[in-house]
Length: 369
Image (cartoon, rainbow, N blue to C red; front, side, top):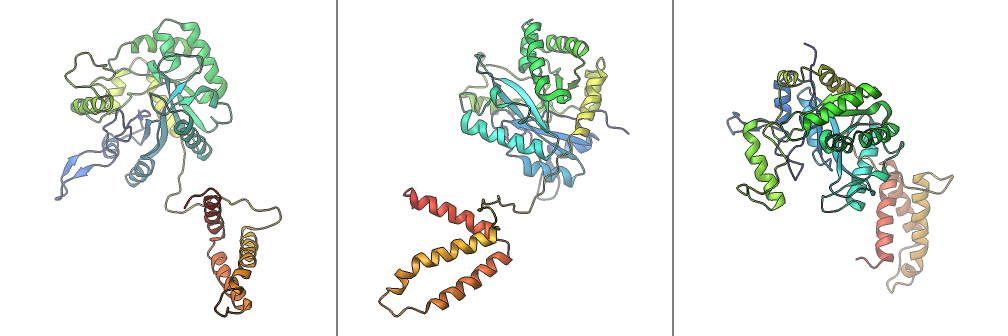
């Protein structure tokens, strides 16, 4: 049977603010299922793929990727990003970014890292709109964020001209890799957002895609999800005045449920499968990858390590030779150094030694023990 729907917007428990979805199933000592995990639930529903889009982080990536592959599920990697435009006030908008390939993955990791280093605020790590250009968005597919994206917010507020302007700006960056996201989870403004998004889709030829903005696996998990939200926000479950931004409908719906929910927009379901086909990131796990240490032009890493090591011996030899006890001849030191360097270089560790030496040199120059 052909795939009918793929979930592309899912927060796990690694979304520290609002997710309770576990990636792996929990089992008792006797092997009986205690709590189903995301990957097993995806397999049970017959869905061929599922996306990980935690808020502003990729913490779950390795566990998710390995678990999905072990169950024959295609792992789709992404982030639910908060985006701030310097010209706007209020809460940042949302944008879901999904990796098509290795270039997209590298771009996403750089953006997420920068959000932690330079984009921290009261809403947590946030991307600055100015950081996104045609180069930094290569290899990424974007979902609009539905009613919480800048296009959706404008539509809900009946500012269609602003929505069109925002959409045009995203299309400049993503071309055919930008999708208007549709959600029906019983929250205010969703139908207004859908109606406006469909108008834009028809007028500008922009594709739409359905998601369920998943925060928990089953409807009965809603209360535990709300408890997590309250812990993060410092509020009480019983507080009638606390913000309620989520609904009981944000669970991992089956393809049949999603088909019934979007029976009037079947292309939104079809596009979820099409996007899954377009996402083909392969991650190599279990193999160390060292950064390439910069060496002078015309030298290999091994040659540079040998040159630096001999210079180090030359610098230290006067101190060694002046020691009170009779020193061993210099030729012994040189022979030992040559043997050690041969071992290091044959094992492919020349770059590693240069990197560690760089750390140590910097530490000494900056008074770090």
